[in-house]
Image 1: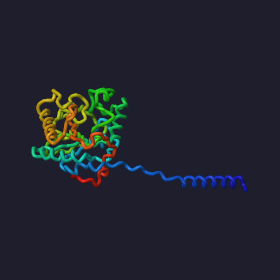
Image 2 (image 1 turned 135 degrees about the vertical axis):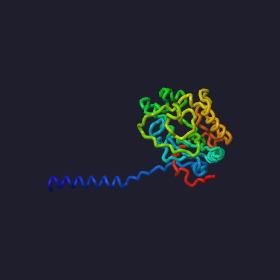
Image 3 (image 1 turned 90 degrees about the vertical axis):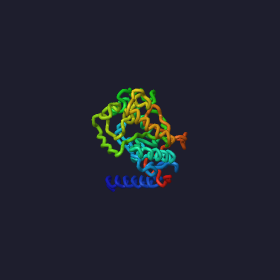
Length: 271
């Protein structure tokens, strides 16, 4: 037998042995995604007229990229909170307004994404719009970023009021010139909200609901949002005019991590 033939036989035997080993190994099992408990619903199935502009599925947010866990631009929320939002929407529609939600349930993996971003002090791509007057190194100490969020319990929403007929929000173009979120409304990114004094997710004291610098129409708009939601059971976070939690929460101590997607609540009764 030639030396070449001998080498070929050795390689053939080695390949056969490797095939036997890999064939015998068990196939990797895909880990199924967690699903929402039956108490969660897609808001659209309960209150279809509420406008949804889910910022964390896009690049137009303080992180500057789609956030982990946001698979689809859909508001997922606990059923009691959704039913309360429907009642609030009915009140506003009679006055020529609509609610618009920016964020609802937020998976823990999204909160973890925020934490990683906040720890990266070199990444300030969106600073000029969302935190122009706040040092990024202060985001944890000042309470803008935390390792847990009430949104992950499912009954907290970020939202605003839109005057009807609602104008569609133009697409955000990554890399476009950013305008500070506390600038006059005519200069800020146009998202059809009534003038609340700042844009959504504006880090700074001007976003405090009762900041004394907010007056006139801006004050009236904040008060309308707060009073309308308070009447149906929502409590405002004083540091953020857009942040409300329905009380009592169905899951006051549970932080969920199922993805934001229609399939997470597929088959759940709308109520």
